[in-house]
Length: 213
Image (tube, rainbow, N blue to C red; front, side):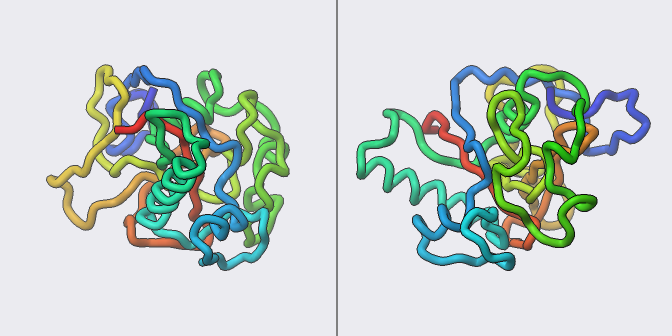
């Protein structure tokens, strides 16, 4: 379920209407955010502010993150390690939230400090991936550490029900188009947006292995 309930007092104009998405094809999601060591092994550079092999790569734009997936797909195909009909790509918001919640409904339940690196326990830096508790599906840092680029454009939800939803650019919106970001706060799976050309020290990504479009 994407979006917030209509009766939530804090719901913004861009957080509805709620839309139920059916994911009809299986996918895999990276257990952690892409690390600096992984980025270097594919791109042979490191645009980071905070240096460390096991830290999430950051200061990458949406296009650079998407290109990383394309390059990794090429390498995996060349070495015959890629399942037929699949590619590495940024996850859609529906895929990301489905994996983040790991079958749970409603807001996060538990001790946030056990799952997340966030302001009260880490200071003004990123932290090594996979060093907090995973969710019940074995995925790390879905809560905290860096924001993650997603495949979707920032656009209104259609409402009702949808199959394999991936939001496209809304050309009616004023201002520059923005791409979706994902993270998970104590209140639940949360999304924001940023200009696709931007990169910052709090913005990284993880990849999904998804059916080729």
